[in-house]
Structures are given as structure tokens and as C-alpha cells.
Length: 220
Image 1: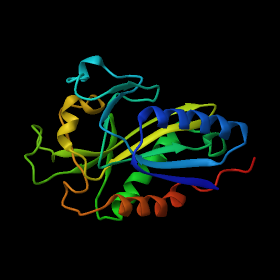
Image 2: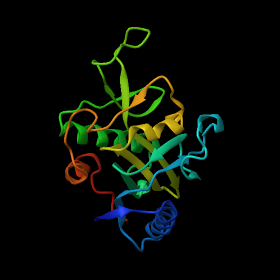
Image 3: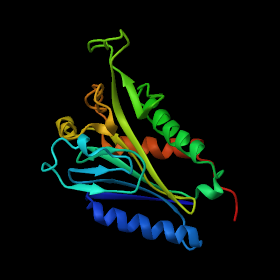
Image 4: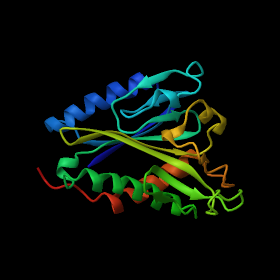
């Protein structure tokens, strides 16, 4: 069984890190179940293992946390659903690339329940949506905005960190960083796309789509 944990209000980033570390160790030891934690953080920036300091363009705006997850800089804040994923990938195929693809597919199938077409792009981490109402890119391709970020850490084949989906955050807060090191594209949210989706709506869709993407792990 996977435990689903939902926190109301804002969860301090330090609290989340401590919980993930302790839960991951317990999962590895076989003393706790896997866990999906749905929460919101107060406004903050996080730096992944490959973050470029030059991409932190406003370092005094919000607290900045150095993390050991993969990826670069990202923003977390009110109106954004953060999904921390503590799963035993050792029992789920022991394949890191496949696991990341499953996270991407989970986001894409969840967005599809709201009639949003999420897409992945080679060389660009996260999930993207086309914005035909915006000016086209210089090469003539359709403009795209990022709606979800993905960044994980793996230790002893137990995952921590996970993904974030923009429901209704203040998109201007992303301007203090170069999100994931990508400056030529913007960010968007479900509400920015014209959909009156609530956090509770998104949570229901995430739970509905989870088992189709992540079948039960192998028995110990």
C-alpha cells in the first residue's frame, strides 16, 4: 500500500526535507510503507545539484535552499501543488530513466483529465503546454510554457522529492530565477490557461491516475 498524505496550509521546507529523509530510510529498512505527500510551501527557491548560480537572478527575494535532488533552480509557493514521491524504485523495476518517464506520464495523464495536452521535450526537463495564442518562437514553432517541474533524488533505490504542478501560483514569483535553466520559454498554470481547477480537483486526478502509471511493486 502507498500512503497518501495531504497537508493543509504551508509546510516549511526544512520540515519536508526531514520527513522525506526519515521516511525514505524507513522504507529502505522495510519498516514503513511508500508515501505520496501533497502539500504547499511558502514562497521559496530551491537549487538542484546542477544549478548555475547565475540563474538565481534575485537572491534576496525569497529563501533559497540547496538540495541534492537533480535539476537546477525551481520555485515553490502558494497555489502550487508539490508532490513528494517516496517510492521503492528498487522494487519497481530498478530503472531510473523509466521512473522519470513514469513521473512525466503521471503528470501528463493527470493534465489530460482537464483537457490539457502536456508534452515533454528533449533537453527540457518538466511538462510543457503549447500556447498558440502567444507570438511564435523565432524559428516559427509554437510558443510553449512550463506547467510542471520534476526533480528527484535517489538513495538506496528509494526516491525523494518529486514534482510540482502549477495550479494558481503567482507566476511573477518565477522571475527571481531562470526556471530549470531555461530562459527562452515561460511558465503557466491551470488557472492561467483559463481552467478554474482547485487544488482538491488536482489531488483527485493525481490519485486516480497514479495506479495506472505505477502498478504495485514486486513483493519483498
